[in-house]
Amino acid sequence: METEIKEIEIIFFAEIKEINSLQDLEKLRIKYLGRKGILDGLFSQLSHIESSQRPLLGKMLNELKEKILKEIKEKENLWAGDKELAGIDLSLPGLYFVIGKKHILTQTIEEVLAIFEKLGFTILEGPEIETEYYNFTSLNIPQEHPATEAFHTFYLEGEISSGERRPRSAPGKGRYLLRSQTSTVQVRVMENYLPPLRIISPGRVYRPDAVDASHSFMFHQIEGFAVDENIKFSDLKGTIFVFAQRFFGKEIKMRFRPHYFPFTEPSVEVDISCIICQRNQKPETSNQKCGVCKGKGWLEILGAGMIHPRVFHFAGYPKHKYTGFAFGMGVERMAMLKYGIEDIRLFFENDLRFLRQF
Ligand SMILES: [Zn+2]
Image (cartoon, rainbow, N blue to C red; front, side, top):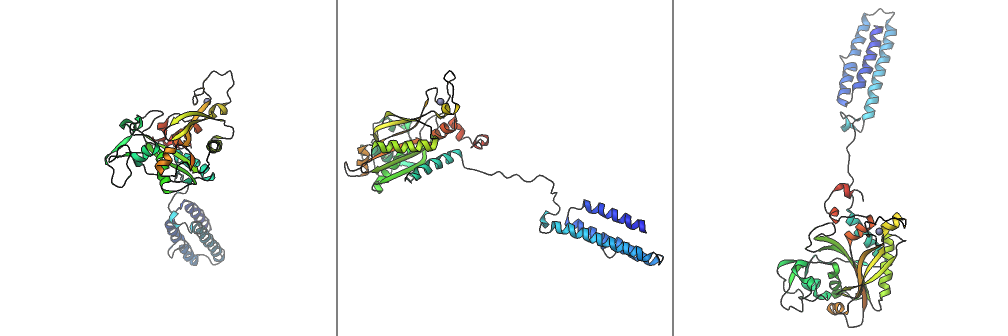
Protein backbone atom coordinates (compact mmCIF):
# COMPACT_ATOMS: atom_id res chain seq x y z
CA MET A 1 0.00 0.00 0.00
CA GLU A 2 2.91 2.27 0.67
CA THR A 3 4.01 2.10 -2.98
CA GLU A 4 0.41 2.58 -4.09
CA ILE A 5 0.19 5.86 -2.15
CA LYS A 6 3.43 7.09 -3.67
CA GLU A 7 2.24 6.17 -7.17
CA ILE A 8 -1.07 7.96 -6.69
CA GLU A 9 0.82 11.08 -5.65
CA ILE A 10 2.91 10.96 -8.84
CA ILE A 11 -0.16 10.37 -11.03
CA PHE A 12 -2.06 13.22 -9.35
CA PHE A 13 0.72 15.74 -9.96
CA ALA A 14 1.00 14.62 -13.58
CA GLU A 15 -2.76 15.00 -14.04
CA ILE A 16 -3.10 18.43 -12.48
CA LYS A 17 -0.40 19.75 -14.79
CA GLU A 18 -2.68 19.06 -17.75
CA ILE A 19 -5.65 20.87 -16.22
CA ASN A 20 -6.48 24.28 -17.68
CA SER A 21 -10.06 24.97 -16.72
CA LEU A 22 -11.92 25.31 -13.44
CA GLN A 23 -14.42 22.64 -14.52
CA ASP A 24 -11.64 20.10 -15.09
CA LEU A 25 -10.05 21.08 -11.79
CA GLU A 26 -13.33 20.38 -10.00
CA LYS A 27 -13.58 16.98 -11.73
CA LEU A 28 -10.06 16.19 -10.56
CA ARG A 29 -10.91 17.21 -7.01
CA ILE A 30 -13.93 14.89 -6.98
CA LYS A 31 -11.85 12.09 -8.47
CA TYR A 32 -9.28 12.23 -5.66
CA LEU A 33 -11.06 13.77 -2.67
CA GLY A 34 -14.75 13.02 -3.38
CA ARG A 35 -16.88 10.71 -1.23
CA LYS A 36 -16.13 7.71 -3.42
CA GLY A 37 -12.82 9.12 -4.59
CA ILE A 38 -9.41 7.50 -4.70
CA LEU A 39 -8.31 8.68 -1.27
CA ASP A 40 -11.57 7.65 0.34
CA GLY A 41 -11.01 4.18 -1.09
CA LEU A 42 -7.55 4.00 0.41
CA PHE A 43 -8.77 5.17 3.82
CA SER A 44 -11.39 2.42 3.88
CA GLN A 45 -8.69 -0.14 3.00
CA LEU A 46 -6.82 0.87 6.18
CA SER A 47 -9.14 -1.24 8.34
CA HIS A 48 -7.93 -4.39 6.56
CA ILE A 49 -4.28 -3.53 7.14
CA GLU A 50 -2.18 -4.93 9.95
CA SER A 51 -2.64 -2.67 12.99
CA SER A 52 1.12 -2.08 13.40
CA GLN A 53 1.31 -0.47 9.92
CA ARG A 54 -1.91 1.50 10.21
CA PRO A 55 -0.53 4.67 11.93
CA LEU A 56 2.26 5.07 9.36
CA LEU A 57 -0.01 4.51 6.37
CA GLY A 58 -2.71 6.72 7.90
CA LYS A 59 -0.15 9.48 8.30
CA MET A 60 1.01 9.06 4.68
CA LEU A 61 -2.56 9.19 3.42
CA ASN A 62 -3.34 12.31 5.42
CA GLU A 63 -0.20 13.98 4.13
CA LEU A 64 -1.16 13.12 0.54
CA LYS A 65 -4.66 14.51 1.12
CA GLU A 66 -3.15 17.76 2.41
CA LYS A 67 -0.82 18.01 -0.59
CA ILE A 68 -3.66 17.43 -3.07
CA LEU A 69 -5.90 19.99 -1.32
CA LYS A 70 -3.12 22.55 -1.28
CA GLU A 71 -2.29 22.05 -4.94
CA ILE A 72 -5.92 22.37 -6.05
CA LYS A 73 -6.38 25.47 -3.86
CA GLU A 74 -3.30 27.11 -5.37
CA LYS A 75 -4.46 26.49 -8.91
CA GLU A 76 -7.90 27.89 -8.01
CA ASN A 77 -6.41 31.03 -6.52
CA LEU A 78 -4.29 31.52 -9.60
CA TRP A 79 -7.44 31.66 -11.68
CA ALA A 80 -9.59 33.56 -9.20
CA GLY A 81 -10.96 36.79 -10.67
CA ASP A 82 -10.11 35.45 -14.10
CA LYS A 83 -12.90 32.94 -14.25
CA GLU A 84 -13.80 33.85 -17.81
CA LEU A 85 -10.24 32.97 -18.80
CA ALA A 86 -10.76 29.38 -17.73
CA GLY A 87 -10.46 27.13 -20.73
CA ILE A 88 -8.48 29.69 -22.72
CA ASP A 89 -4.94 28.87 -23.72
CA LEU A 90 -3.00 31.73 -22.19
CA SER A 91 0.09 30.89 -24.18
CA LEU A 92 -1.59 31.90 -27.48
CA PRO A 93 -0.54 35.29 -28.94
CA GLY A 94 -2.87 38.16 -27.98
CA LEU A 95 -5.29 40.11 -30.17
CA TYR A 96 -3.67 42.97 -32.06
CA PHE A 97 -5.48 46.31 -31.85
CA VAL A 98 -4.58 48.95 -34.41
CA ILE A 99 -4.43 52.40 -32.86
CA GLY A 100 -5.86 54.93 -35.28
CA LYS A 101 -4.58 58.43 -35.82
CA LYS A 102 -5.43 61.62 -37.65
CA HIS A 103 -4.97 61.90 -41.41
CA ILE A 104 -1.86 63.79 -42.47
CA LEU A 105 -4.02 66.60 -43.90
CA THR A 106 -5.91 66.99 -40.62
CA GLN A 107 -2.59 67.04 -38.79
CA THR A 108 -1.29 69.72 -41.15
CA ILE A 109 -4.43 71.87 -40.80
CA GLU A 110 -4.28 71.61 -37.02
CA GLU A 111 -0.60 72.52 -36.98
CA VAL A 112 -1.15 75.61 -39.15
CA LEU A 113 -4.20 76.71 -37.12
CA ALA A 114 -2.33 76.30 -33.85
CA ILE A 115 0.44 78.60 -35.06
CA PHE A 116 -2.02 81.32 -36.08
CA GLU A 117 -4.09 80.95 -32.92
CA LYS A 118 -0.95 81.74 -30.95
CA LEU A 119 -0.60 84.88 -33.08
CA GLY A 120 -4.06 85.98 -31.98
CA PHE A 121 -6.12 84.68 -34.92
CA THR A 122 -9.61 83.24 -34.46
CA ILE A 123 -10.82 80.18 -36.39
CA LEU A 124 -14.01 80.71 -38.42
CA GLU A 125 -15.37 78.52 -41.19
CA GLY A 126 -17.57 79.34 -44.17
CA PRO A 127 -19.96 77.28 -46.31
CA GLU A 128 -18.68 75.01 -49.11
CA ILE A 129 -21.77 75.73 -51.22
CA GLU A 130 -21.40 79.40 -52.05
CA THR A 131 -23.11 82.00 -54.18
CA GLU A 132 -21.46 83.70 -57.13
CA TYR A 133 -21.61 86.87 -55.09
CA TYR A 134 -19.28 85.71 -52.33
CA ASN A 135 -17.07 83.57 -54.56
CA PHE A 136 -16.52 86.26 -57.22
CA THR A 137 -18.26 89.63 -57.01
CA SER A 138 -17.41 90.48 -53.42
CA LEU A 139 -13.79 89.52 -54.09
CA ASN A 140 -13.59 92.04 -56.92
CA ILE A 141 -13.76 89.35 -59.60
CA PRO A 142 -16.16 90.75 -62.24
CA GLN A 143 -18.71 88.56 -64.01
CA GLU A 144 -16.73 88.68 -67.25
CA HIS A 145 -13.54 87.42 -65.59
CA PRO A 146 -12.33 84.02 -66.91
CA ALA A 147 -12.40 82.59 -63.36
CA THR A 148 -16.21 82.68 -63.48
CA GLU A 149 -16.33 80.36 -66.51
CA ALA A 150 -17.96 76.98 -65.98
CA PHE A 151 -14.72 75.11 -66.61
CA HIS A 152 -13.13 76.87 -63.64
CA THR A 153 -15.93 76.26 -61.17
CA PHE A 154 -18.57 73.65 -60.28
CA TYR A 155 -21.96 75.33 -60.66
CA LEU A 156 -25.01 73.83 -59.01
CA GLU A 157 -28.41 73.63 -60.64
CA GLY A 158 -31.12 76.10 -59.78
CA GLU A 159 -31.14 79.82 -59.05
CA ILE A 160 -30.29 81.12 -55.62
CA SER A 161 -33.14 81.71 -53.23
CA SER A 162 -34.43 85.18 -52.46
CA GLY A 163 -32.71 86.88 -49.60
CA GLU A 164 -29.23 85.83 -50.74
CA ARG A 165 -26.94 88.51 -52.11
CA ARG A 166 -26.57 88.54 -55.86
CA PRO A 167 -23.84 89.77 -58.18
CA ARG A 168 -24.24 93.47 -58.93
CA SER A 169 -23.19 93.05 -62.49
CA ALA A 170 -25.96 90.54 -63.15
CA PRO A 171 -28.94 91.76 -61.14
CA GLY A 172 -31.72 89.27 -60.62
CA LYS A 173 -29.49 86.36 -61.49
CA GLY A 174 -27.07 84.31 -59.53
CA ARG A 175 -26.14 80.72 -59.10
CA TYR A 176 -24.91 78.45 -56.38
CA LEU A 177 -21.50 76.89 -56.81
CA LEU A 178 -18.90 74.90 -54.91
CA ARG A 179 -16.50 77.52 -53.64
CA SER A 180 -13.22 77.64 -55.56
CA GLN A 181 -11.34 79.33 -52.73
CA THR A 182 -11.62 79.94 -49.00
CA SER A 183 -11.32 83.70 -49.58
CA THR A 184 -15.14 83.68 -49.71
CA VAL A 185 -15.02 83.85 -45.93
CA GLN A 186 -13.58 87.40 -46.02
CA VAL A 187 -16.70 89.37 -46.92
CA ARG A 188 -18.98 86.96 -45.04
CA VAL A 189 -17.05 87.71 -41.84
CA MET A 190 -16.67 91.45 -42.50
CA GLU A 191 -20.42 91.80 -43.07
CA ASN A 192 -21.00 90.54 -39.58
CA TYR A 193 -18.06 91.88 -37.57
CA LEU A 194 -16.24 95.16 -37.31
CA PRO A 195 -12.45 95.37 -37.04
CA PRO A 196 -10.12 94.58 -35.42
CA LEU A 197 -10.31 91.17 -37.13
CA ARG A 198 -7.77 88.38 -37.19
CA ILE A 199 -9.36 85.36 -38.82
CA ILE A 200 -7.99 82.02 -39.95
CA SER A 201 -10.34 79.81 -41.96
CA PRO A 202 -9.64 76.26 -43.14
CA GLY A 203 -11.82 74.25 -45.53
CA ARG A 204 -12.38 72.30 -48.73
CA VAL A 205 -12.40 74.02 -52.11
CA TYR A 206 -13.33 72.69 -55.56
CA ARG A 207 -12.05 73.16 -59.11
CA PRO A 208 -13.03 71.06 -62.11
CA ASP A 209 -9.43 69.99 -62.73
CA ALA A 210 -8.46 66.61 -64.15
CA VAL A 211 -6.74 64.60 -61.42
CA ASP A 212 -2.98 64.17 -61.79
CA ALA A 213 0.10 64.25 -59.57
CA SER A 214 -0.39 67.93 -58.71
CA HIS A 215 -4.13 68.52 -59.32
CA SER A 216 -7.28 67.36 -57.60
CA PHE A 217 -10.91 68.49 -58.08
CA MET A 218 -11.11 68.90 -54.32
CA PHE A 219 -8.38 70.14 -52.03
CA HIS A 220 -7.95 72.12 -48.83
CA GLN A 221 -7.07 75.73 -48.30
CA ILE A 222 -6.45 77.91 -45.29
CA GLU A 223 -7.38 81.55 -45.63
CA GLY A 224 -6.13 84.15 -43.18
CA PHE A 225 -6.76 87.84 -42.92
CA ALA A 226 -6.35 90.73 -40.54
CA VAL A 227 -8.24 94.02 -40.72
CA ASP A 228 -7.80 97.07 -38.53
CA GLU A 229 -6.81 100.71 -38.73
CA ASN A 230 -3.22 101.08 -39.86
CA ILE A 231 -2.39 97.53 -40.86
CA LYS A 232 0.67 97.68 -43.08
CA PHE A 233 2.45 95.46 -45.54
CA SER A 234 5.16 94.92 -42.91
CA ASP A 235 2.51 93.32 -40.66
CA LEU A 236 1.78 90.83 -43.44
CA LYS A 237 5.47 90.13 -43.91
CA GLY A 238 6.13 89.63 -40.21
CA THR A 239 3.10 87.36 -39.75
CA ILE A 240 3.96 85.14 -42.72
CA PHE A 241 7.61 84.95 -41.71
CA VAL A 242 6.82 83.86 -38.16
CA PHE A 243 4.40 81.27 -39.51
CA ALA A 244 6.87 79.90 -42.09
CA GLN A 245 9.63 79.63 -39.50
CA ARG A 246 7.41 77.77 -37.06
CA PHE A 247 6.01 75.44 -39.72
CA PHE A 248 9.10 74.74 -41.83
CA GLY A 249 11.95 75.47 -39.42
CA LYS A 250 13.98 78.39 -38.12
CA GLU A 251 16.64 78.15 -40.84
CA ILE A 252 14.40 79.03 -43.79
CA LYS A 253 14.77 82.23 -45.78
CA MET A 254 11.78 83.97 -47.33
CA ARG A 255 11.17 86.12 -50.39
CA PHE A 256 8.18 88.00 -51.82
CA ARG A 257 7.51 88.16 -55.57
CA PRO A 258 5.03 90.64 -57.09
CA HIS A 259 1.88 88.93 -58.34
CA TYR A 260 -1.73 89.69 -59.22
CA PHE A 261 -4.92 88.72 -57.39
CA PRO A 262 -8.18 90.64 -57.95
CA PHE A 263 -8.91 90.91 -54.22
CA THR A 264 -5.54 92.18 -53.00
CA GLU A 265 -3.45 95.16 -54.03
CA PRO A 266 -0.48 94.97 -53.98
CA SER A 267 -0.36 91.17 -54.31
CA VAL A 268 2.55 88.84 -53.76
CA GLU A 269 3.56 85.24 -53.95
CA VAL A 270 5.68 84.05 -51.06
CA ASP A 271 8.60 81.65 -51.45
CA ILE A 272 10.76 79.98 -48.85
CA SER A 273 14.24 78.58 -49.40
CA CYS A 274 14.02 74.88 -50.33
CA ILE A 275 14.01 72.83 -47.16
CA ILE A 276 14.94 69.63 -49.01
CA CYS A 277 18.13 71.20 -50.47
CA GLN A 278 18.92 72.55 -47.01
CA ARG A 279 18.35 69.19 -45.35
CA ASN A 280 20.52 67.33 -47.85
CA GLN A 281 23.22 70.02 -47.79
CA LYS A 282 24.22 69.04 -51.28
CA PRO A 283 27.75 69.99 -52.31
CA GLU A 284 28.05 72.75 -54.93
CA THR A 285 29.50 70.28 -57.39
CA SER A 286 26.46 68.02 -57.32
CA ASN A 287 24.67 68.23 -60.63
CA GLN A 288 21.75 66.14 -59.46
CA LYS A 289 18.75 68.49 -59.33
CA CYS A 290 16.56 68.56 -56.21
CA GLY A 291 13.21 66.95 -57.11
CA VAL A 292 11.14 69.29 -54.93
CA CYS A 293 12.40 72.74 -56.02
CA LYS A 294 13.64 71.46 -59.42
CA GLY A 295 17.02 72.97 -58.65
CA LYS A 296 15.66 76.49 -58.18
CA GLY A 297 16.33 76.59 -54.45
CA TRP A 298 12.95 78.26 -53.72
CA LEU A 299 9.49 76.88 -52.96
CA GLU A 300 6.26 78.83 -53.42
CA ILE A 301 4.19 78.46 -50.25
CA LEU A 302 1.31 80.91 -50.56
CA GLY A 303 -0.32 83.93 -52.15
CA ALA A 304 -0.99 87.10 -50.19
CA GLY A 305 -1.47 90.84 -50.35
CA MET A 306 -3.14 93.91 -48.90
CA ILE A 307 -6.94 93.62 -49.05
CA HIS A 308 -8.33 95.55 -52.04
CA PRO A 309 -10.45 98.63 -51.14
CA ARG A 310 -13.24 97.19 -53.33
CA VAL A 311 -13.51 94.21 -50.95
CA PHE A 312 -14.02 96.61 -48.02
CA HIS A 313 -16.62 98.38 -50.14
CA PHE A 314 -18.53 95.11 -50.64
CA ALA A 315 -18.23 94.41 -46.93
CA GLY A 316 -19.91 97.76 -46.24
CA TYR A 317 -16.95 99.24 -44.35
CA PRO A 318 -16.50 103.04 -44.43
CA LYS A 319 -14.12 104.31 -47.12
CA HIS A 320 -10.43 104.65 -46.23
CA LYS A 321 -10.99 103.76 -42.60
CA TYR A 322 -9.49 100.28 -42.50
CA THR A 323 -6.62 98.43 -44.09
CA GLY A 324 -5.79 94.77 -43.90
CA PHE A 325 -3.84 91.87 -45.32
CA ALA A 326 -4.96 88.47 -46.52
CA PHE A 327 -3.20 85.26 -47.49
CA GLY A 328 -4.22 81.83 -48.71
CA MET A 329 -2.34 78.56 -48.73
CA GLY A 330 -3.01 75.07 -50.04
CA VAL A 331 -2.93 72.47 -47.25
CA GLU A 332 -1.87 69.62 -49.56
CA ARG A 333 0.94 71.78 -50.91
CA MET A 334 2.17 72.62 -47.41
CA ALA A 335 2.24 68.93 -46.46
CA MET A 336 3.92 67.98 -49.76
CA LEU A 337 6.66 70.56 -49.23
CA LYS A 338 7.18 69.76 -45.59
CA TYR A 339 7.37 65.99 -46.00
CA GLY A 340 8.67 65.73 -49.58
CA ILE A 341 5.49 64.07 -50.93
CA GLU A 342 5.47 64.10 -54.72
CA ASP A 343 1.92 63.09 -55.66
CA ILE A 344 -1.26 64.78 -54.37
CA ARG A 345 -3.31 61.62 -55.10
CA LEU A 346 -1.58 59.84 -52.20
CA PHE A 347 -3.61 61.96 -49.76
CA PHE A 348 -6.94 60.65 -51.04
CA GLU A 349 -6.25 57.02 -51.94
CA ASN A 350 -6.51 55.76 -48.34
CA ASP A 351 -3.44 53.58 -48.74
CA LEU A 352 -2.50 52.79 -45.15
CA ARG A 353 1.12 52.09 -46.11
CA PHE A 354 1.33 55.79 -46.99
CA LEU A 355 -0.86 57.22 -44.22
CA ARG A 356 0.83 55.31 -41.39
CA GLN A 357 4.09 57.11 -42.07
CA PHE A 358 2.82 60.32 -40.52
ZN1 LIG B 1 15.44 71.87 -53.40
